[in-house]
Amino acid sequence: MSKRSVARQLLAGLLALVLLGGLAGCAAEKEEPAAQETKVKAAIIFSIVNPARAGGWDRADWAGIEALRNEYGWEVTVAEGVPYAQTAATAAGYAEQGYDLVIFPDAGQTAAFLEVAPKYPKTWFVMMSMCEKLPNSPRVAAWSPDLYAYGEMVGLVAGKATESGIIGLVGGVPVPALITLFSGTIEAAKFVRPDVEVLTYFVGDWVDVAKHRELAALQIQEGADVIFPETGPGTLGCYEAAQAGGAKIVGFAWDMYEDAPEVMLTSVIINKPRMYRDLAEQFMSGDLEKKIVHCGAEYFGLADFRGSLPEETVKEIQDLVTKLQNGELPIPVVIHEEIGGS
Image (tube, rainbow, N blue to C red):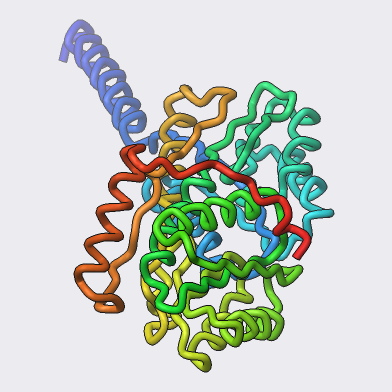
């Protein structure tokens, strides 16, 4: 073989090696896994334990949390049983850890919301309850249900359902949001039944089952045949009192039928999952801004009555609710501050 032939073979071999190396490099590039998107990290702080099985408000929030996790892939940390006095410190801890958002589901946490947000302007702080004022910080927002309108819907149901003409309202702690809600209930019940009597008692906490049972039983002894409990895990006591005393319950914020099917008239639902989806869509698109989103009666609705009332009464209630949602009921707005001292 000539020297020229040997040189040609060596050159061809080198070219083949270079080509194979390039192909291997391309293959390696193709096999390299794509970088994963960073998950949104959010924290939510509850004042009660086991929110998934607590009162209706907390269950509605829990459904919102599940939407964030399952539909949007968010990593959501849940703090339970945090007293109001420790809420600000807990929220600050999440901000220090680099969380993208800290969520407050309870209007009783308003003081913490206002206190902590200005200290961490790079973190989003979001109130998912009644909110009249935002903190002095650039990354704050609120989805604020119109709790007066919600109370009106409760009052329409209770006012049409009561046979005795006496309704009982049992609250946990008389925070401003609850005073507003109960005020709407009182005025709407009077709108559909002018001679109605509304008994309003506050337990002083959200969890004491025995105290809730005692106050609901007292209302039943005083003639109430429809009870609306707006509270937390202590709601169970109201169900027990209704079962023992022959009264009916209007469930709060979520469909509570499975908890007490024998006494549940219906539930007035707050579509909190819609609020959480709104938050997720705006945050992920970069459209979230400092604002209060006012959630009116279109965010509220009724669970199935499941035969608890005559069909004609159900139809009357549903027609009234539709008119309320359309702004067609001239129910006066009166805040009954006096009930907070009961």
